[in-house]
Image (cartoon, rainbow, N blue to C red; front, side):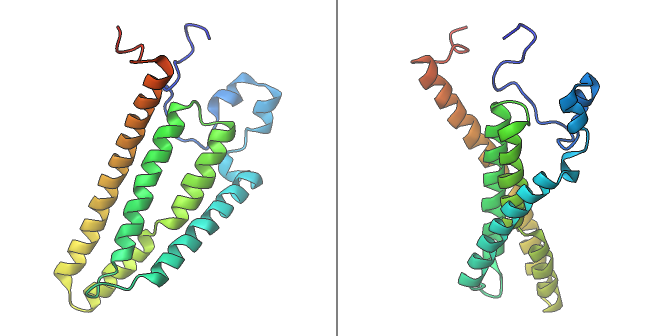
Length: 184
């Protein structure tokens, strides 16, 4: 590892992870093969589709099992919060393991974009909110919509925080009693 290489965990997610500008600029044979954006490559579309089908099936199953409470579909709030938490946790762990390539990219697309994208449901949030509005429950509709969005934001932050903490613990186990960073 040269001095110019980033340390493990110092990678950032790309602004547009579907475009590989660095590869295209190198002019390598691999760059030519990968010059199409990820979202235009059939294999990656299949990966997202498989994950999305699994996530959608899981969500549908849960929605069928849990009845609304007081006319409020609480399962939608729970699904979106759990999905946001898991997405934060997943992305935090993937970014600490290196660039968005190879197996990490497949995991991000399969689990993040696919499964968790299919599992979470902001379209159901919209329909549920409109249903509450049409029933004349304006205050409840606003509370439901805003509460769901806030719960999702908090859950994603918590997922990231849990990922950070888990990675710190793993770093300590690898380096012994404390991490090398703490000794400096």
